[in-house]
Length: 246
Image (cartoon, rainbow, N blue to C red):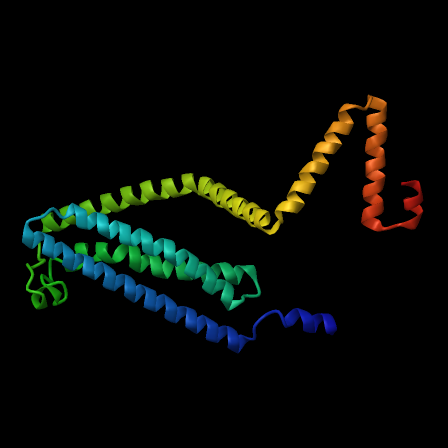
């Protein structure tokens, strides 16, 4: 009974887990809304580019970059939320993580494509935003809509491929650089803590030990190393029997 009580106390109760899942769903909806608002702002920017006579390729690149940034940020948020929900079984943990990733990435990756493919030809005011901002209409014919959709798909796929490949390639280099930087900072902090006189005494002891070794024969050097080992053991364990031997 004691083992069972200690084992079940590690996991949240059903009501507490449901509250945490509800918070996670609310976070998913808020992030999806933020993603929709960001992509809508990028579409308004595209209308401004069209009105000024600029190329819309730059807007497609900005849209692809925003999609990639949202995906990268959401991976960490989804993993943290799923761990916070404290699922007892690994299957439930994986199912919850897959649901969060699919729900958000569906909105993030395909909202602009759905608008270009199905809504743009019918609604030329970008859901009323173009009319309120005094921008050009966003209505297009069949071929023009397909051209914009093909352009956005191509740029998004190329951007995702280039950025994803660069991220996977540079990840070991980045981890090695971070580890090396932490080691350097740790050594620097240790050097600051050591007093200069103590450091000089240690260097003098090492130099004297090296000079003594240079004057010894091989047999004497082995005996000297054995004596040093015994002295280290005595200093470490503080045994009176070994003090006599030392």
